[in-house]
Length: 127
Image 1 (cartoon, rainbow, N blue to C red):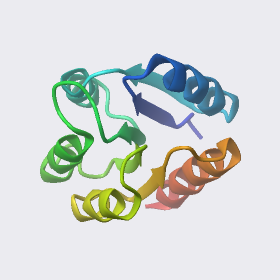
Image 2: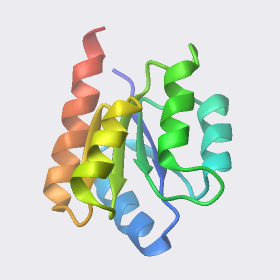
Image 3: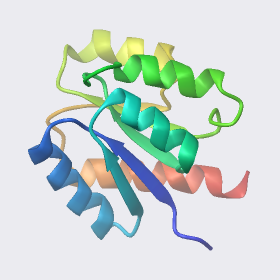
């Protein structure tokens, strides 16, 4: 079984560094982008199994990127986990409405994030 790939789209370096370490320790291959446009380019260049997608990004919002993923037949099978420090329930509902598979609000326990990623990537392995 090949190693699952995660694309982390997070513009805050300190958060990205912590998440990169965490996701890498969980055994996933990880790439990171810091802007919406760079994320779209990375998605098209080498589609990952899962995108951990911050809502608030430079250039394009996570919501917009998620909508693009869901509309593009070449990308629509990618799992999307949206994360935000924003307004809890409203942001969560909007994230799920644009097609996110799951949504987490910062701050979250690192064990919860790892468990969620592992669960999401396990779900797609027998499609």
